[in-house]
Amino acid sequence: MQQQALASRIGRIGVWHGGLGRIPAATARRVAAEIEELGYGALWFGEGPGTKEAFSHAALLLAATGRITVATGIANIWGRDAAAANGAAHTLAEAYDGRFLLGLGASHAPIVNLRGHTYAKPLAAMRDYLDGMDAAPYEGPVAEPPPARVLAALGPKMLELARDRAAGAHPYLVPTEHTARAREILGDGPLLAPEQAVVLETDPAKARAAARAHTRFYLELPNYVGNLRRFGFDDDDFTGGGSDRLVDALVAWGDVDAVRRRVQEHLDAGADHVALQPLAADGGLGLDQLRALAPALTGS
Image (tube, rainbow, N blue to C red):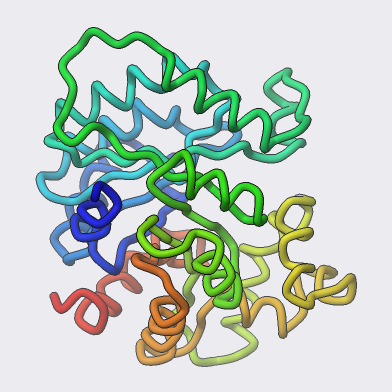
C-alpha cells in the first residue's frame, strides 16, 4: 500500500521549518543538508504570504539533499491551478527519486483574500482541486510510485477527504488529543503526520514567551481557533497569544526528554510521523535544538 511505503520512507520523526522560506537559498541548502545528516526523515516547509513559492522552493531543497523526503506543509491551493500543481508534483517526484511529498491546504480567509480570491467553502474548494489534479493531463515521465499527496486537515470532514482522496493528513497546530481523533476518522492505513512546535527551554516564563510569539498569529485565524474549541479551549484561552494551558498543549517545551515524551504521546495516539518545528526565541533557525534532539529521536 502506498501509505505504508510512504510512512516507512519518511520515518517517525521529521522537521517542519517555516524559516526556510525567508532566508537566502545558499543558507537554506546548508540547513537542509544538515537536517538530513542529523537523521530526520522528512523536511516540511510552509508557503505563506511573502515567502518562497512552494514548488520551486522544494526543488531547491531536493537538490541540496540526497535521501530526505521534502514535503510542502502546505502548498496553498489558491496559489496555482490544479493542473500546474499536478505537473509540478510529477516533475519533482520523478527528478528526485520519489523524495517529494505534496501537502495541500485550503489556507485561511485573510491569506486567500490577499491573493485576490474569495475564501468560501474550503472543503468544496479542496475537493474540486483534487478533481482537477486527477483530471489534468500529464505527458512527462512519471515516478514509480507516483507522487503522494496529503491534506492539511483539522476538522472531521477534511480528515474524511484526506482519508478518501489522499495518502493521509498533515495537521498543524494541534494537541495530542487531535491526533487521537484524527486517527479514529482516518482509520488504519492513511498517513497521519502532525506538526509539533518545540522549545528546548526549561524556564517556564522563557519557554511560554517563545511559544506565545509563535501562537499569537495563528490564534487570529478562525480555522485554528474553531478546531481548538473542539478540544475544550474557550475565549479565555485565545487572548494574549494563548493561555498557559493552551500554549502548553500546542508547544512542547522543557528538556530533551520532555519533547521526547510529547512526540511519544502523538505516536501513541496514532501518528505515523511527527514533524518538529523548533522555535527560536531570537528569531534564529533553531538548528541547535534540532542537533540536541536528534540523538534521542532519530538515533543519530
